[in-house]
Length: 329
Image 1 (cartoon, rainbow, N blue to C red):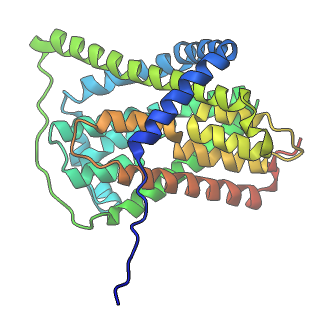
Image 2: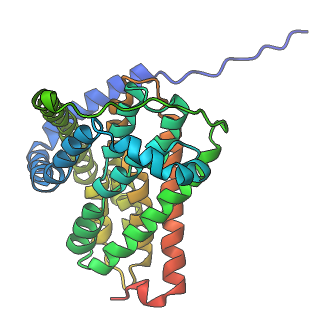
């Protein structure tokens, strides 16, 4: 007697993409008025906050990568980076720049490291998991001061964000638990060739920021469609804010900050999680950046989920230990 096993139907990704694009075009037409406003707001957000904060960092990071600063950091910080994160001291460069500049600077530097064979594939995948972060200007300035109207909240979120980064870095030291030594020396910047290097750095920075601009507009429209269509009205405010933040963190966290509540604890925990996770928009930016390398996106996704989770836990712990941080209003 033969037993027949029916094959499970496979999810047709190409078909789903086609359906999504058709629906997207339909909703673009249906909600054209609010979509135009969403694009205008996205353009304003990009040119007022994103471009001024990221573009100079991209140029500076690219120029610094042509100097011996990476070799200096390797010499000085190897005794810290190796035992703590299981990467060479060169990893300190994307780690530091990723903390001070914001998404997606860390990913771009790690991608450039891999293209130039400065670090091995395993090292770069470890670095990718925890060096691509929200920057202090965004967390303190935009999220804290502008959205929650409190610099103290911004500082709290920045502290827990950095704690989350360090935790993920320590966890990922065990990723493919072999240390691959890499002794590639980065060439010193050639002053005679500085003009061409600067031109290339500016061009590359414009290209990357242009890509970010496109993703911000795309996901701002998606968030607007979700809100305008009424699809999200069935859910509580915290769930709506989480869905929007999963798509794009700036608009999503803005929604979370406007939730009416006598206690901000839940809002701060959600905000902390999404600052660490970054959202699908940032994920797509990173995927685009590393697409021309042999790096896998999987460690990055796992790292950002862990970053969001650990940051949220640290935020909760600080609020419980210091009740004054519950921010009752």
